[in-house]
Amino acid sequence: MKRRILALLFALLATQVGALVNPAYACGCGAMIPDGQSRLGVDRETSVVRWDGRTEQIVMRFTVRGDAQRAAWIMPVPGRATVELGDGKLFDELGRLTRPEHRTRSYFWPRERDWPFSPDRRNGVGDAAPGAAAPPVGVVGREQLGDFDVARLTATDPDALKNWLESNGFTLPDRLATEVRPYVDQRWEYVAVRLAPRGQGKPLRGDLDPLRIRFESDRLVYPMRLSRMAKTPQSLGLYVLADHRMEPATAIGGSTPEVTFAGTVHPENGPLAELAGAGPVFLTAIDQEFPEPGRIDADHELRATAEDTSYRRAIYHDKLLVVGDVPVWLLTLGAAAVALTTSAVAVLRIRGRRQRPAGAV
Image (cartoon, rainbow, N blue to C red; front, side):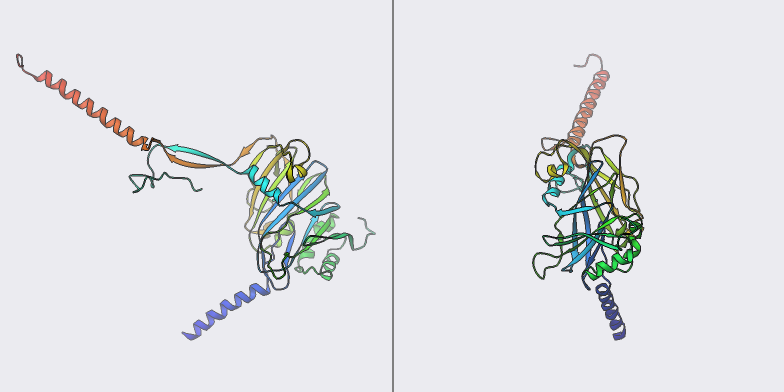
């Protein structure tokens, strides 16, 4: 018995040590890597994409968990990028614009939680994302943005890119060189970021400060291929600002993308107006889950839909139909019972009159 207990304790200890030695590399729109033997997971990646047909801007924010005090991530981009801090209020504003409508649906017959099936009278309520001669790695620029150390890079050799990043403090998984090769072949560039919380000794947790990345592009593309290195399921929330309603060309290995909002918005001031520019813009909100990140096989390329159909998600609250505080079904049954009783009494009276003997008073 003691041997079994010791074996179980050893197995549990080995599992915990393994989790520390082999951190679950979590990737958002690129590769997110914790420092040392820490653990870091990206619960959700939320991004706002603005595309005017020539220039693309991505404001991205990660929601993370774990015990890492420092981390780094790399994001491929199809053109020369500029990077600056984003405004977290942008996401609050978009959340308000795209929140679901709440609608009430009345039902006639009582349900499980209604009287007489339940002792109380509560109504049921629905529960409610360079040339061949160029050096292997080129540094376009490097700047400190708040807590972010940002390096903008070019690369003609994936191994040289990995070596440069590691020699400059970016600890990366071995397979990174393999995963970035398609981007190297297409001569994309890279945004590499090191980040740490403001307070010393504090772990990276919750919503990180957003970054705003801008580059020229004649197509709307959202880099996702490096997310295939993630060890845990990924969740993407994507707000797209463009001239038309947009949709992903394919699911790229994830669940079917779900549109949660589509419609024209008219931002007048604040971070959304600053990003969208003057005049109205069509906003499409898309959610997608990646239960098995290893199946991600491409970047998201978004295209205009055939029609700019508006849509807003609705949350329905089912409510028992009542008059005053009395259920309509009960009133209906009561009225039916009264009508039947009245009819029966009338029939009996008519029959009594017909059966009364002649001359009876």
